[in-house]
Length: 443
Image: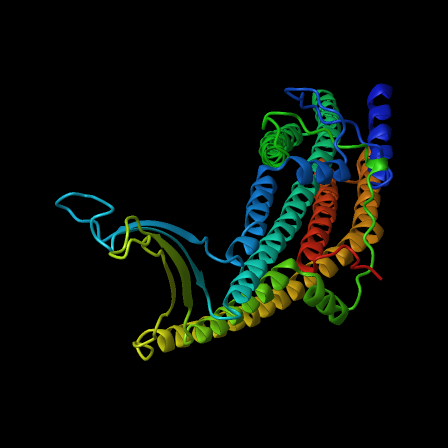
């Protein structure tokens, strides 16, 4: 066995213990990065609650939906009546109200009355549009929840990977120290030292990249949560995070749930209902609207027989005549019919798109779930055993330094791949919930 100092041998043993640690049960140290501003721990549920409360996009869409909810009663009401004041047959030579028998001061009121059913259809159209606006709010809530979860799990992956990088930087520094000691006593090669230093530099470069990505994803998450973008996002400890990957319901069941619960589909159905009502309204426009009114004329002066001049009462009723129905009303009916068909096709297209999205997301989740299981039960433990075996062989000069370092880097890559795959699976869960429209997606 080579002559190695006891302190370095202890370092080797320590690194061996770290390589045997189970990656999912290890309470990894915090990242070496220092946050710009201290922030309380942000659980995923706290992030979801905040985005629903504070995101300005939701507030904007809610205000729009509230405004549209005030429209139905407006369009369903009769037009305001018109009050008239007229002076009739006033002689311009004297402007005397008593001079001519037909001179009168007239007060009147008129009211436009749409053909029966038109106002009800207008109110129905506006109600469908208001309900569609509420569905838009629900759809936006799903999208924001999906985005928050995706960013949160992305930060989870980056934080766990930075922890793994820090551990591996410590191990590589120990490897460099051992290689330098063996080189000084003539038992090692200079290329071993250079190799370990190169791998350490690669890890430092990876650390820089991950820290930069962490800041970028934190800024995106903070923007969704309506808080300053440079605010640090502190995630809970690993032991407090649920990383379990449950089995999904059958794809056919998820399709059925999406058809019932997805707000985007409900919105499109309401748009179709509004288009259908517009077509019915266009058909009603073939029938006339009414305009009724009454006026009372006051006369001054006396008749030749000495009696007071009688006042006049006038009544009127008018209707609009669709003389240009072929080029106007019937063309409007054709237009509304085409618009209705357009929205029906849009619903079919949207449903096919959702089905395709569901199929892709389910495949992504199942792939990630299987990979996580493979990493946890096979690849990572096997890589840990390989490092431990090579470490033992290196201590007795049966394994060269290059193979030891490569084995450790391979283990590092598999550990980061594990965290990345967990993040991808959780992101797929978030996308699936948003696509289905509810979180009851598990068996």
